[in-house]
Length: 99
Length: 198
Image 1 (cartoon, rainbow over the protein chains, first blue to last red):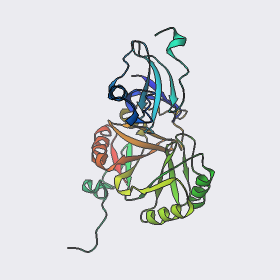
Image 2 (tube, one colour):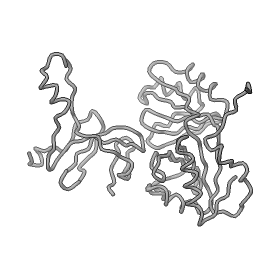
Image 3 (cartoon, one colour):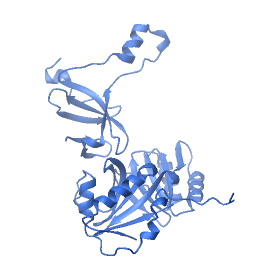
């Protein structure tokens, strides 16, 4: 079991309390009617699937029921950081020297 | 048809009243605080007018620190999330307290009466830590779970908000639909210690 830090409860909790919620930092197009079907489809369906560093959303389902972001290595399952919604990650792929 | 509708706890069928006093030597003691008023309060903790209004209405400052709780003569308040609190009041006073909150609060807030959605169980006894260890993965040491702290966590595969009242007393807020499961779980997991209903 992993211990995951919830940035809202401000402490480490059991993985059992959380559920993953997919890729983070996806922005809804401000003017959906102005973009092509292809761009809209990319927004709706296209997701990254990297080996290595990944920014993703998690839900503290059994605790405060808030979504937050995590930077996780998909190969080792190491969670480098968790941060609140609206914040920018401190650990990014470029700093780590990965693509 | 009867004109009066009797409120029933979600554990009405368990007939806990009839089990009171049947066993007095259990290491676990269970009491259901049934039919209390549960109000869900939402608002912006950074809004000083909101905080002042709640303090005025409930007689105690809203606990804004994560996992904290507060108590006044009128209500017990549990922190659920940065913008969400559970206010537990005496049975029958929930409508008045809700009206009182509404009269003191303005702007962006929400008060919902969710009394029928959940129930409050109080677990205590000398072996309570043993039962809690079976039921939740949270660290129960007083350093990580001090008196007055409230956590939302998993409790035997379901969820519960757990408030520590003293070293060996915990209050559990459980969902109505899961209360029978929790009741069965408590019976089974307290078999080795003995269960006393009060």
